[in-house]
Image 1 (cartoon, rainbow, N blue to C red):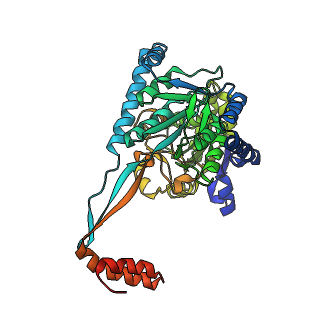
Image 2: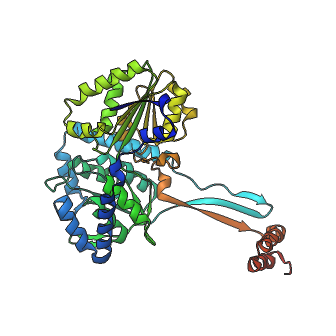
Image 3: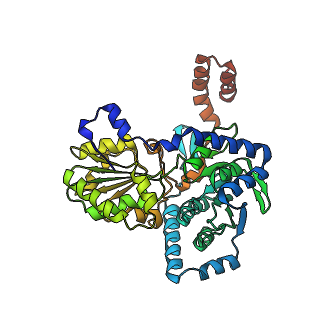
Length: 437
């Protein structure tokens, strides 16, 4: 991890200190994704299959979620694993049902003029679930359950196959818990392209979706970016690329816990970025020593060490300066391991999810606390939040006006329309209010 003293850096140095890994915007990634999208636009399912065989090592495959496949998956796991997955799914469901937005009451702004907001689910959602090197069934729960609670009628879930072309049984059980009827084994930019344009494949059809969701590697993040820029292309949830975690500590932090949290994200991906911010030089040193001790016996040590190459250890003068670092970076995940973490919250404006205190491990949020762990990366937290049921819905304003209301508000609207030079607008208002042009 690169060590930095925040107080010695100028503005340019501070921006450089908090820069994301360069691979996320590499030109070869942009060009490769562009090629895939163009090919799928021109050739449809044939191109999707070709890229899947090249990058996934297998053609796209549809796994139907049936009683038989679910029973087989359940039998392949320990009963404790099945129970843990069910509890996690239920917590996600409970949280999103409790936070589902409701239609507002009517608001009368002028006598006889009443309006309200109503919420409606989107038609079709494309859910990208990272996989390949690790079966991230938790990401399936964190997307498919909120989409179901929102009432989305078409949910297309895709995930890369395992190296041997199979799917982890926990992924099957997660799909079942989320009420999905199928799961597509298809990953990378080709999966995003398939959901963008729609694709006819040997195992069935993937429909074009209205909005793309989910985290992924640099190629997936770039594919979402390019897809939403297409004329008539799908919307996207947020920039949700390789994982990020910022841990803020003071002299009272437990080094072994802070180190474990940093490594929990570093093991995700070589492009993941972890940042340690400390008000104490000694604590910073202790934590870095602990990171080195813990990383040595991780099964994914090579990935974690590659990520640590892009990591930062930043010494700050005080917690006010720590808040400056937080808000400038806008971390996907933020862990506050300080003596009085609640006191920091009012000063934090940009973070996808905040874990308050020693016991609020980011890992708990990743799997079972309830809120979705699909969160904005690359500074998106400065303007965006994570996935909620509202992410899968749209709002419409509904306005009702009586004759009396039109008589009061019509002349005002007509006058403002003429002030803008829009005579047809004004006449439409005049006709409601009984006024002459």
